[in-house]
Image 1 (cartoon, rainbow, N blue to C red):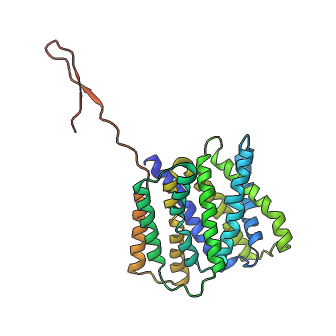
Image 2 (image 1 turned 135 degrees about the vertical axis):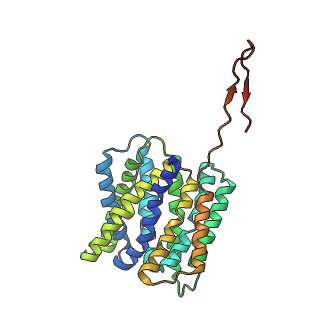
Image 3 (image 1 turned 90 degrees about the vertical axis):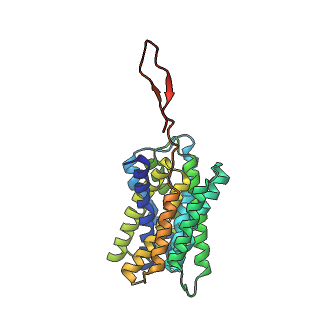
Length: 306
């Protein structure tokens, strides 16, 4: 299997886990504890990955880790928790589906990565597919929730592009562990000061936090940043379209949401967008072929005619 395909499959685990995280957060975690929710998601996952990586930041990675922790962990987790609690899953997912376009533009501005036509076409096709899949009456939508979802999309786009720009000099697992740990430590005193004691953890809540911490954070972020290390930021952004689609499928399976021709067409458009945005490499030049020696004359190189 081609190396890029393997990295795409590994990276795809992250948006699938995050798509399920919408449902888990909304259904099983306390609605009034966004700071503690973000803290309990980030800090245990960061410490777990830190124990596996066994590396400390060095050189410029001290300040880089602090900035990325603020964007990718502290701000993003709090905003996403608020969006998951205040919005229906379909509404939150629809807003976050615009993140590939935001990532393309952010990569252009911050890293000078001019988007290719295929990436733009893939992003637009995927966004159209998600919109078609999730199209329907949303009812009374919280504007605070929409603002939180849009804010999460923007800070994550900046953080992911910076992560791709600074990919040299740090192991992806170690860098992820630094960001999660630092972000959790930033949130811990704020959560205690604003929200008081941690929320009580009964059986269902404990299992939900276990999924959020181990699967949707430790595993998913390790896969995501590894993908950013080996794939173009635009391609990784297109894989992020699997995030809202996972929410749609979970809604169909667990909540009895309708799935018909419109939803199927939307899924097909998303798949087309991901295929359009996959990495491409130029075809290798044809190798010269040396003709055998005949009649005492040395062979002359010639190009193979396709």
